[in-house]
Amino acid sequence: DAGVTQSPTHLIKTRGQQVTLRCSPKSGHDTVSWYQQALGQGPQFIFQYYEEEERQRGNFPDRFSGHQFPNYSSELNVNALLLGDSALYLCASRLAGAYEQFFGPGTRLTVL
Amino acid sequence: LAKTTQPISMDSYEGQEVNITCSHNNIATNDYITWYQQFPSQGPRFIIQGYKTKVTNEVASLFIPADRKSSTLSLPRVSLSDTAVYYCLVVPMNRDDKIIFGKGTRLHILP
Image 1 (spheres, rainbow over the protein chains, first blue to last red):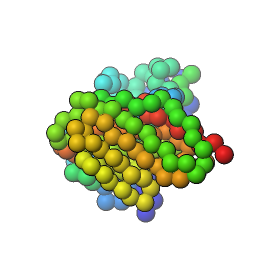
Image 2: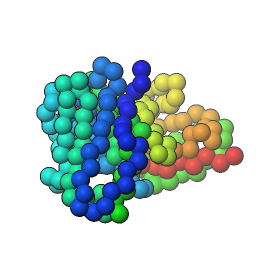
Image 3: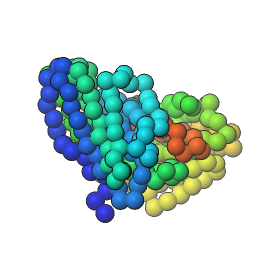
Image 4: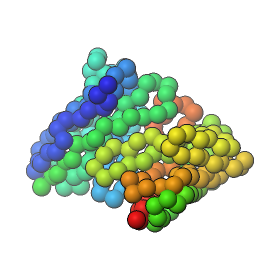
């Protein structure tokens, strides 16, 4: 079992650009959540997807959007990048109704 | 959502038992207490979860008093590889609700 995988591992963008990050959940998991983790801070919840729909959302602007595909994989899209969007973006998966989340290694996004 | 408070950092030595206490005064009846561990440049990893009294697994023990307003994560005989950030979370029994992380406790194990 490969666990949760994310791509790319690192990404450098400039202000105003758009970025798409990808996540493949752990085998058998159907619920995917995305988190943003700034340096020295805990992960901040962005949103959660289940059955291809956004089910929960944290305090993030509409520039942050996502998608879940029929195979449960997910994408996080960020438009009009700001310097403050530089962070580690984490994807976590679990079975609906389960407590334990499994996190991927993250994508390190740097906005210049 | 219940907010948690835990020490920003702690130091200990190899072979010692480490106890990290978390305060969650506003915990609700249907909330569980969950701890995650995070190493640098990695995603958090689930350690242990409990509702009341004591829970033990191969990694740690979790002690929860009767009023559930605090909890203590106990790591027996720590090693250098236990150096990490430890997060205490309060997770709703409605398991599909969002999970909120605080700033965690940065544990540094010294030789």
